[in-house]
Image (cartoon, rainbow, N blue to C red):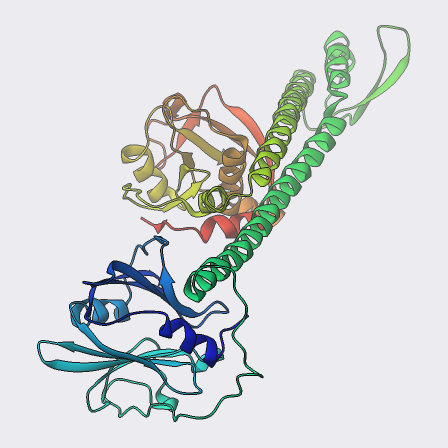
Length: 467
């Protein structure tokens, strides 16, 4: 609940500003700062100011709040021109939520108007003794609240103390009550907000993993009969003398005495058709086994995520929630420079080449042997690298992120899906006299990706970008 004029007046009346100096001003965010004060009577004490929020207030505080990482323009002005000033007088404009500080430093007088008004009317305005505006927290030209304009303070007015009472309190002082209770309300709201964001993050990640699981299970179902391809290849091999060029099928008797018809390519010879069937068998077997492995990894990842988020949400900790949400854009302090794109996924750096020149440059100067390389199979596209970390394996989520980027920056993008292969950089072999950046992978593994454009968009929106 917002403070009324009577309550603000009561808060100020509890405080002794006699012979008080402003020793420092600590900014917490755009809307709040703490004035570090000192007087012979009170010694060192803190005055907290928050404006332009549902919890705006001015009160004495014992809380040490977090300092902002980047100081805004207005706070810089306060530290340069207000710190060191003596507080000559503090009063509340009668009937208004306006606190007026009269300050003096080296015989120069300034005034600071803290307007705890509702909505866009709230502001902090610094003037000289003639009310010429020197600086403002929020520039509002239409209201005449900008540097160089003459400021008009609020007019005093009567206020109904019955209609606007001072709320009851149990703390030793009203300042203590306001600081404690409103801070608690603000903390509770922040906690709820962060918790909802964490729940949303959990649901998005689990939904994505479960979607990947369904895709892998479909692949397994599609290729589970790969042994039938080998059986056909074996039959063709045994009866190769019956296969004539120009045929599109051949009728044979299998090893159990059953009649079977096997489709073949009329343009190929017997040996070529046999070899094609064995190649189909090997590919289908590889896809089947890789997807079985992926299914096990995804199921394990789902269980780990569910456990992680259950433990995290049970903590109800603002710090833990902020840390979790901060991981979504944790690409700061990254000193890699070079061509292409630099992105971050769960703390792992991902480098993306978008053409042959960038592919070659990344390969030559920006990756090492243990880094992972991904590329679309049988389709032109950019190289994607995952920078390795010592003693850490690449999580499935990071591999899937990199896979989506590989599809996005390839000609397979139009199809929305592609088969990729990936291996360590040390297993890539350059093609002698080949095109720029052309390599042949060895010891590669397969990865099937259905393009998730939302996931790609989130990755590209993170810090890093061109490098």
